[in-house]
Amino acid sequence: MSETFDVIVIGAGPGGYVCALRAAQLGLKVACVEKRATLGGTCLNIGCIPSKALLQSSENFHAAQSALADHGVMVKGITLDLSRMQARKEEVVSANVKGVEFLFKKNKVTWLKGAARIARPGVVAVDGAEYAAKHIVIATGSESVPLPGVEVDETRIVTSTGGLALDAVPKHLVVIGGGYIGLELGSVWRRLGAEVTVIEFLDRLVPTMDGEISKAFERILAKQGMKFRLQTKVTGARVEKKTVILSLEPAKGGKAEEISADIVLLAIGRRPYVEGLGLTEIGVARDERGRIKTDEHYATSVAGIYAIGDVIAGPMLAHKAEEEGVALAEILAGQAGHVNYGAIPGVVYTWPEAACVGATEESLREAGTAYRVGKFPFTANGRARAMGETEGFVKLLADEKTDRLLGAHIIGPDAGTLIAELVTAIEFGASAEDVARTSHAHPSLSEAVKEAALAVAGRALHI
Ligand SMILES: Cc1cc2nc3c(=O)[nH]c(=O)nc-3n(C[C@H](O)[C@H](O)[C@H](O)COP(=O)(O)OP(=O)(O)OC[C@H]3O[C@@H](n4cnc5c(N)ncnc54)[C@H](O)[C@@H]3O)c2cc1C
Image 1 (cartoon, rainbow, N blue to C red):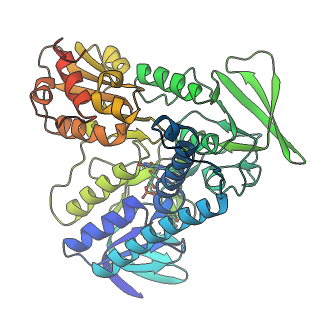
Image 2 (cartoon, rainbow, N blue to C red; image 1 turned 30 degrees about the vertical axis):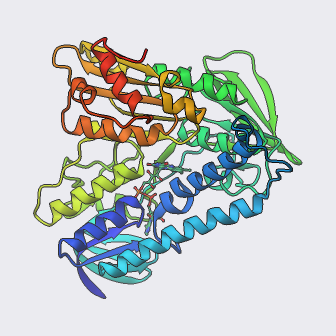
């Protein structure tokens, strides 16, 4: 045995590296195995961080081209230097992944470089060496879901990884999948000048979001020039020279047609990634969708082996993985770690942003819960007007009898930041009235949140 640890975490994404850091903080001897050349997982290398870097850069380009003129800022001769934009993205990624390496050193977490296999309970093999651990944590994340008939080459037909690294703006980008990754990357390339068509099997975008937000989202993005083909399925793709020809059909079946693109982005979802871990051999149970089954303490069906993050059930989000990493480290250290799954926000970082937490109107109706709705549009918010960002609204859902906040949904400027207040409110079990009676700085976008809370009781002031 090369070395013995209290905890070996497999995978250094936001679930794994945060779990390793927290376990080390709590005095455990920790190693984290990562096969990628850099730490930080999907999120830092090919997910959240590079996508947000490009979203910011493309937003700046777009503002310089159009929105600034409205403010009397006249910019002439704007050109796009895509290679500089991509280089900046790489710099942002590099700073972040190096930050995790620094944190590992600071907290004395050993990085075992290479691909891990669980040789047997209590033993992890990495490139021929074996390491013993009291606890093994699987945090190996997820990968893009393939679509039969649409073969990814990361050049013409790309996943988000290739979609983040294009070296030219496509003339026509077809995005398969109207989820958050498709809409974010679609927005990036749309702002940089591509014609963008999004093809979605279902009858709405981002189906986990509140239906009203989904509809408003579609309308706002369509105004920005994005085209949508809902209730449509892609049945195949062929590449002819520099063109990809996709075959489409109505989702329920019907007349087939073709659409051509120079780049196709496949973004129909992600699935758990467990390749090479040896789970079948050691008997770690998985569910019908390939996710590792765990109990409420993240224990798998094999004693001493745990799993967190994208590889288990729940929303595939970095902050969800992080919360699980912290909770599990605390459980392993003998404390009482816990995650409140009712208070995990979801944000789509388009502009405007769309953000949500808790119940949707659809889920409340389905559960038969009586609720009240409070809504407030950004058109009636002074700060939003000053910014020239009046698209969207805040929508709060509260229990009809107790007034307890059950869900919050925002589409509008900085929705991803505004939602944090409502996540805290839900975490604290606040009522809509609690939010309504809290002073909010003027003039701020957050006043729209306060007004929506007032609107739950039918007493919004500024509308
Ligand atoms: C384009 C894109 C944009 C996204 N944007 C957001 C966003 O804005 N906000 C958000 O919350 N989420 C976002 N996500 C999702 C987010 O990236 C994931 O939810 C998150 O990374 C999951 O963390 P994780 O720790 O479970 O796994 P991952 O981050 O996937 O990390 C798993 C790590 O395990 C390593 N690994 C796998 N197998 C082995 C092995 N056998 N041995 C050693 N190492 C191994 C992998 O190399 C990888 O580094 C985005 C994802 C994508 C693709």
